[in-house]
Image (cartoon, rainbow, N blue to C red; front, side):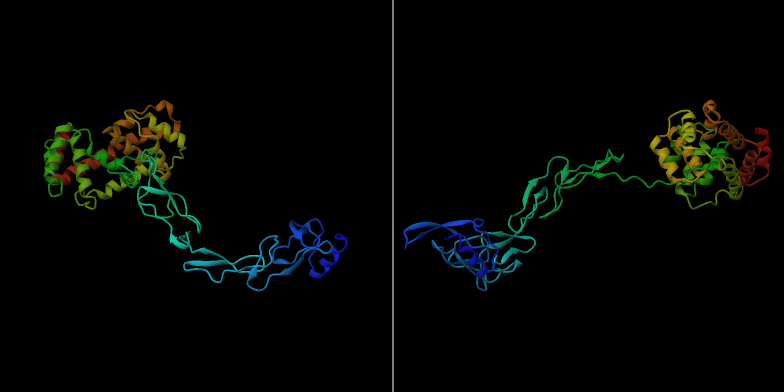
Length: 389
């Protein structure tokens, strides 16, 4: 009979429950002195009347502000929390099936009954597990190779900068509380310290007598230091000294072109160099081969790649020649003469040969004569020059 009347109860409560599907609870019937297995009531309801041998459990909905969240055998519903506490926000409102849910605002966690701020990890320590509304931050000392230079409840330890991977030297070694500092790399520039024409002019093979002293006197109005001049005279032979004196002068007076009245002629010379190199359509492989063909120490591949990436044609070749000269403390004009031509494409061999001839030919000789006359300021020096050459 118990099974037959269960359908009537379903209709009354408008709940789709099939007999045998719901969880059970044990109820002792005092009238018949038997323990019965009664159906529990679903969430949102409570037990109004226990089941009997003839009737199923009678469930009733929870009143306003009361709830049950699970199948149950309760005789009444639980009362919803009235309001959230200080520093808490409501994440779920009260309903017949669930209590009002409160949680601590961002940056706080529930510590016993009150919201407390998440612990901030000090310098040298990092966050390994961020805090939640229910749990505090977990900190740990920064392991080797990492650092934390801030007090934070969210920041983990960071990996220290690896200067070696960046191709730079260490300026300040890092620790658990600060990052490694690398030495600043100077900005790469396609400009060169001395042009090929200036180099050829001040490295002309037969300098006139006492020209070194004349140049030193002429340069004395600049900010050059006598100690640097003395070092040039001690380090380089007399034929090389004019070039290094001019290079030193130029490094101290970059915006001052007043020393050389032949600026226009030098510009024409440099235009000739551009004409010889500008029409070359060289591949990266051609340029790598050219730089390997120069005598002495090789320019680093990374510097070659940086130059090709940054500088336009033909400035990239002029920059590479300048890098080679400074690396070898060498003479570019002589270096071009010592090129291992056999490895180069035919067009490149011809142009390098023409470039060397141009920088030591008649036009450069004429320019050299004019500069000597300008420096000495009289025509008699020209006669003296002709007797020397």
